[in-house]
Image: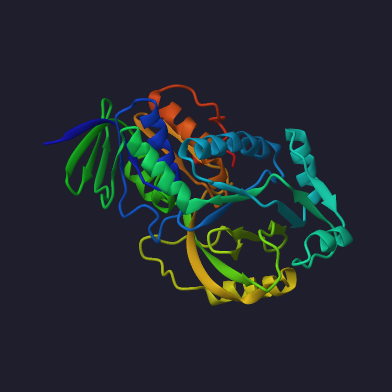
Length: 370
């Protein structure tokens, strides 16, 4: 016997839970299926913290971030949970003039700081030359956000089924059928939010060939502050030949650092989660150079997945009865409130507020400009 529902969301990471909640909030009958558990070790949304910033060299993304902030504040108010911790952001290295210009064009404020000003305001950093400070940046409590979204979605009537890997997906003219461990499910619309598994799901649904989405594995380290370091310290992004980032983790008091790099494509189901010694060596060297207020030897490490597209823009699109939200490329977490609304709009058959051309799956078709 095939059970029927109105909408099925595949994937209970950040995007999957956010669109599940949004559809349920609108009174829709929605089931979210997750192959493992919420926040499992291979989930791209796992962990304690993510950076929220306006600081992009593209005013389009600055504007999206500004609009997303209202969504995070609204979710915090509705849940009664403190989901965004203001800490500020220091941008270092290349492209600072373009960064400030893009922020100004979008209406976001920032300020240049000299080396002397940086030393006086942030003594636990060692920064030569100038930097850009963005006071509005903060840390999103990632694991708490997943819990809040799941709890809220269920409160609106959604069903979330963990340990339910999709065995087959058949999209027809009138409905979509999914094979799950407990039997067959049929829905009007399916929403694919598979994170690092987006390529497999898109291929199974006949949306795109394998290789359209390229999962990669990132290295993260956590540092312990030395005695006397003020908390919370600001986050930072250093752009150059290698792009480094760092941010406080309010839940633990540690400082998280990582390298933002698309990396080599791999299989998210089988890739080893062991530490990358070469990446860790780079992170330790960066900590010794930039963060004298912290012990450079990590007190903890973590591997996390990116779900990449070739141009680092997202995919928010609909083809027939299949909606897809994917390709967040390591910078999509902050935009979840807006992306969830756009995906829910597409699922309901209305035009999303986001530009479909820029986030179209079709931009990767042969012959299309990248």
